[in-house]
Image (cartoon, rainbow, N blue to C red; front, side, top):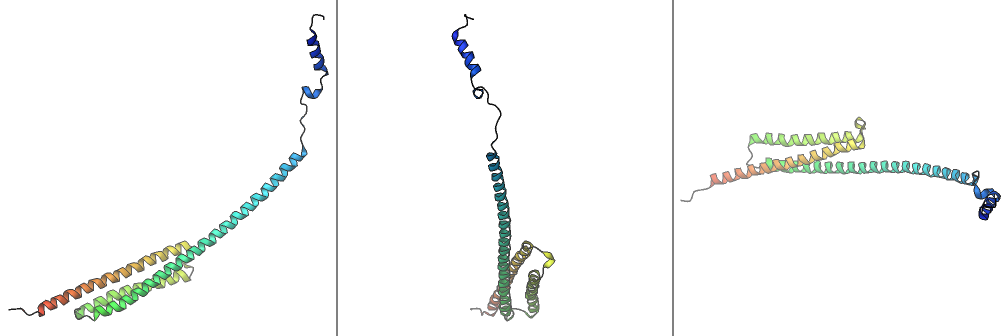
Length: 193
């Protein structure tokens, strides 16, 4: 043993006498406080999730109410425009029809044709107003507000077309009257000799 160096003997002795903690980690120890805090965090997270879900439900309810109000406003605007267009239509028919029929340049057989054309537009307008009343007052075929609004929008477009039709007819009859007036002036003109 004398041949073994002294430093190796010291190292082996230290290894054997060295405390166990320095050489091995040993059994892991779990701290109960970490587990309890993790459980508390999970419970708190669940509460926050439940609150977020309630908030989402409330926001959906608010969104639905806003959509209902928006649809109601749009329905009101459509009804207002249809009513305004029909009032304008009635006034135009009353005034324009009287002006056309009172013209001396409209022949007797044309009076009935012109009156029927204007009356047909007026009857269609009244039918449209009646239908609009049914759509708004009854739960017409269990429609949603969006479907009801689509019908009202179509009615609004139709009322604008009727106004344009009346204006077009009036313009055409005015042209016929002015043409016949010019013809009468040419016939009654005395030649210059």
